[in-house]
Image (cartoon, rainbow, N blue to C red; front, top):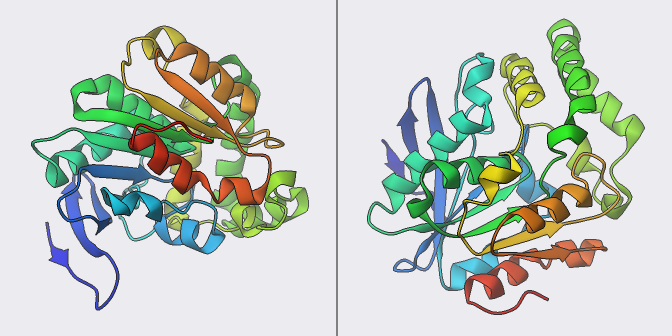
Length: 276
């Protein structure tokens, strides 16, 4: 592992993993407990900042906040093997980063979309590793996910033939969900190495959230954050998660302003307050 310190901003580093190197950064309270954030598929730390949706900086008043690029995304490396991007495999990367940054204390797991699935699979694998969970925009899951699988496989084949530009063009035609109309880059920008995108998409086609019966084994207090008008991240999935997890509360944002307040909502939740 190589550690580096930029001239300004968070302290970052690299964590070596099987067939990948993970790039990460840590900001916030030096002595605080750790919270680790995992981003969505084909996104990255930098992409999330450019999109301006998820501002988790309110957590840094009390926590060390770690953010990392999933393997094959952003500044992290990977190989073109679909199994490497399955949710259980990504969960092992998250657990390794938790072990590296907080070997002696449990952490808060935060995730968005693919990151939410990563956190859930990691919490199932090693529940003692986490104290609380914050799960944003869980993707369509279980039986409702089946119609999406063929489209993901077709997208992987299309990228192999014509490149990732085809994905961006399709996203621009479809446009973002209505709740994100002011931030169209959310849907049209991708931050993963082009030669790895087909593997990421094929992994997503086979992936799913843990089954409801397994979710009932998770004891962690959990905050679930969702927005409407997004068929890829439907409120139905978030509502079902809240029903299946033993100690969960659901927060629905209906405006962009609401979404941009999620960092404060999460900070209140970690402090033991009620989300608003």
